[in-house]
Length: 195
Image (cartoon, rainbow, N blue to C red):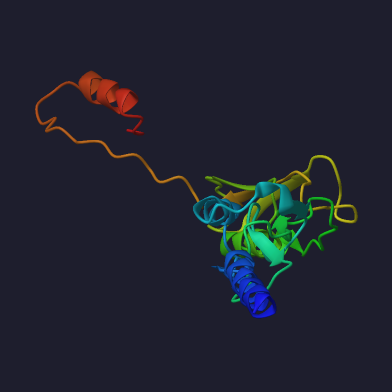
């Protein structure tokens, strides 16, 4: 009889321990999400932070602060004392060499596409009026801390693009009938109009 009671107590104890210690928190898919969403999930589920590790790595595919990978796949159930690693993007590698196209033959839209496609951090396009170069075409460009062979994502490159010829200003023409020519000349100088 005592043996039966001992077996029942052990079974009940084992069942209680199983229910209390079994994993109940479902892991979400965090890849591609902001790191703050992981931290919110940890807090919401009361997960012990000492077992959570965030490591930073450069990633071209994910912007800075976004999750690149997680050590436990989504859908798996874990306990509050789970040990889990996350790789967080530091953004694209600023020291990666970037191939420089023939900038002189490009137009503003092509340059902006090249900047975006390569996630260039310090390449700037400046537009200015130019009488000699058609609108959208490159007027000049200047490397600051590199050249075409050593150009990296963090290198400084300024590109000047033409806005075409500066449009003429406008002036309202008065009725000068019967007035002295000196008044017409004064109006011309004030409004920068050749008489």
